[in-house]
Image (tube, rainbow, N blue to C red; front, top):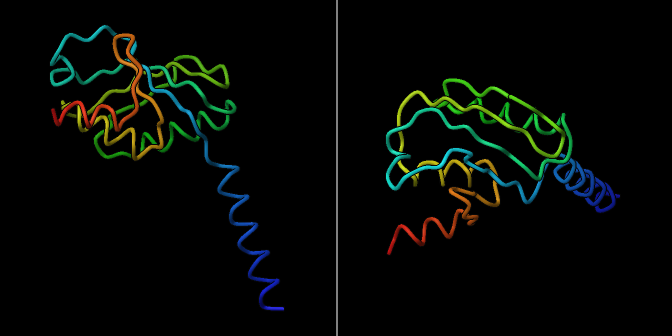
Length: 128
């Protein structure tokens, strides 16, 4: 009986995680950024794509707002699977900060100046 109850609990837990998780989210920085410009800006005009619904997009961005370094995170448009967002940071940060933030948020890809990379690729690129 305990085994059956344990299996049922684990199955419910896994299904609930799958219901809230999203994969293949791409964070696109819409502005054309020159080399080193990310260190001087606090406003990020962004697009998040790969979201599963309007409600999940809102929930995803609510997690973004919980970050203590984010001053505001305003949705400009929300089509359900993609949304344009204006993110205002309290302070300037370097590229690695944003890459770590993307990893923490479960973002699979970051696109800057037309180049789409995974957070791991940005980290490896910075080590060279």
